[in-house]
Length: 355
Image (cartoon, rainbow, N blue to C red):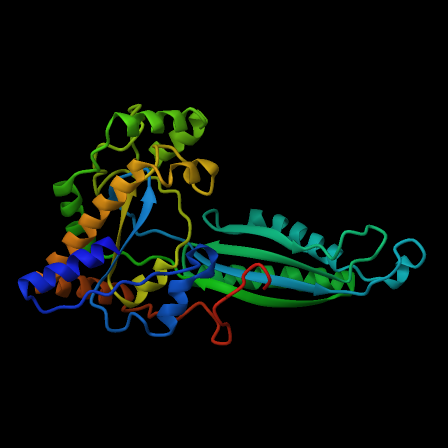
């Protein structure tokens, strides 16, 4: 928002024609907000898209992510008294457990860079003396590209169908959300790298470094080493990033999924990482939460806002940059046009926990 406001003000002061649009995207974590927005045409008239993400580093985000489908597998059986008449029951919970076993056996026979995770959302009740008539498990199924992800979804669904067959229950698969893998854009990545190098990382002070050092004391050496390994560098002992990661760093990226992926399929897209946390902080942890309102995080957000605004102004004043970005984007999609991974019948998950 700060970057978009800065660009808006710059356009007004300098009387330069152009438009900047800011999208707040709720439910990015699993809800795939941007994927639904892309499907609805929200990015069709954009020339480029610029985004950012919290990180340990000051860098251009490598354009790598996993395509991902989140889906619920809902099993329905038949309740019965587990002691007096167990033969009359058909356990939906048994079906969930058998499905999970089947998927775990599948792991040996899927691509090594694919990922499958699950969470049981409904166990059918808390009474062990009742055969559970309903149960639900949510799966996150990831692969390096859309075709690979869709093939893995097919295999997981077959395993669920097999579990239903074994337990004489019924199974319904409900897609919650889905995202595509990232499409890179060399001209925008090179332009953003120049901006990051010119601005430099945030200016941290002794308080920032002391707090980051305290956070790092709660992390294992393995977690810290893994983050350094992701950029192909040795640990310098620095608690916060005080350098710009080179664009050609020998990276070993830790790849997750993002709904920015779908944006990158329909408009040239680039992302920045800003060092809002101590080096080595793993995401989805209490340590991330603890650093969220620290001055260091705020400084990093302001600095990355400057970088995003600078790149946007460069694009608004240099038609050649936009033309090169669009040409690079068209080349990458020439033989692989975008198709939304979200089935047409699936609406945005307004209550993901309830399904």
